[in-house]
Image 1 (cartoon, rainbow, N blue to C red):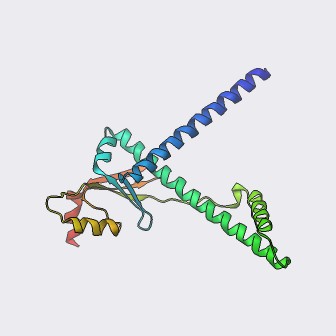
Image 2: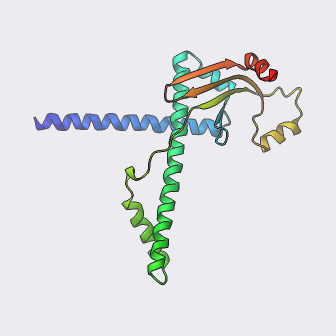
Image 3: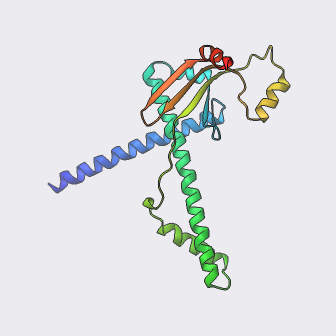
Length: 195
């Protein structure tokens, strides 16, 4: 009986490792898409810009498109969690060092590192409430038509981190309901211009 229990635990552990490996590969792929300019995330306005060629590949059918947007959400959420944890660790480590400086006359670098590491080990996962990533807007952008656009204008927009190209579609993704709405820009633009 004990052999079967170990076998099931081993199998469950292998399944978890396989899922983590798939997630890591997905994150790596999305990072590469961002580095190549096919994806762009504007953290301030919570907007995702997707290159039209990538969107067309992912729109093979509705399931692949929905899975792609959901995976982008997980990618963005993992980034947000990582940043929140790093900020939390830094605040707690600095607080521990400041408290120690109040009690001791001077601290060496080794003392500071020891205090920081000790505080980092003390922190539990339940100490920090996980951040929340609400829904986000996404825009599908076609490459610019270089025959009518000045190169200096494109360069200025790239330097200003503005998207370069024509909008073809817009949408919104709500992770809580896994609901996605999407429309062609040509149908939305007249409604915006009426205001």
